[in-house]
Length: 400
Image (cartoon, rainbow, N blue to C red; front, side, top):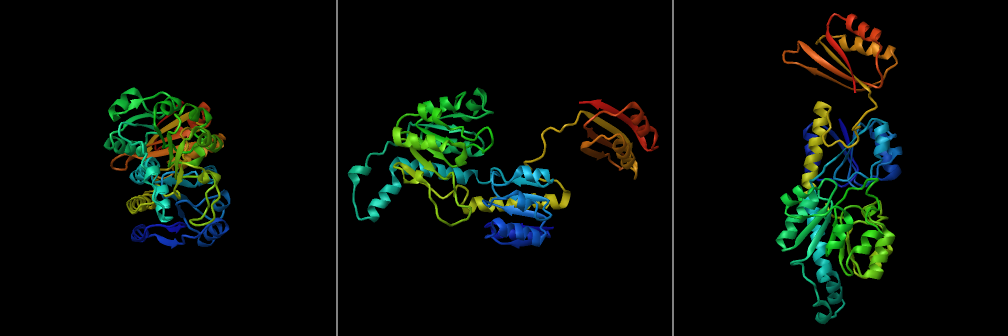
């Protein structure tokens, strides 16, 4: 199996892939047309990326079977195009949770103590204790969390260590689960924003989260409160955020921006970082040695399982539901030709197979095939399947 790695990747991961028998092509500078050309020229089976965007043209360029996002989010990959070509997309969720939570809390502390401004003044030869000795402090403040996945839960631990109160919202949060986490339950994002001193965002980007932090959210936030975003810029209405910074004195700690360069270095021009009370970092939430080693290990595990079993851990683009309307269950002797006979009859009936699984029992004497179909089979077809092969033990057609 040939693996093309198109972003910075840990040496331990490269060595791990070679140890499981993969041929590795590593070029951390591949982008755009160069990456499409490399996919075509190498005929790689697997593509590994971190922040590099993977377009439909790239996916069509070669013979890729899988794309692994060496990180949690996968919005930089054209998942729809991958699905149309039957290319698995997998990610490494949770492996950078601690790193992102550490940076989020670093931004909170930096905003509260105005650390960057302190440093800038000192480097400019100015001593201004009078100005910078006005921090609010975190003890007893309320941290509001929007999103309570693994990163959000890491935030809870750190907030409690600072003596903070925590309130939160997520789609899956209930009053009971909130109590187990030791936080206050809120039914809406608006309620969290209204009740907190610091609003920290930990949502994945999806159609229903794009722009979810909007003018209505900023309207209920207290003047001078903090917004921390280490997830995705697109979940925040950028125009509304700029207005809130200018009119309500909202302080913002941002690791993600609406128009980031596609390369690791380059020019950056975003008005938001020029506004007062905005601290920014270079989308480095997951960029600690610990996190990258964990992600490399997980990437190797994903590719190993795919190589050895054909199964893909953490796959994100399989259909949760198919158009199947009926399930054909065939109990049969585990012998050649049985499934070919069944599938030929299904094909003759012009019915499409949506999903299929064949489970073999101990001893490899018998098996059960479960075949999801996008239509029903006529009784005559079922009879032909049943009577056309002596190795079929029993057959059932079930409406879904």
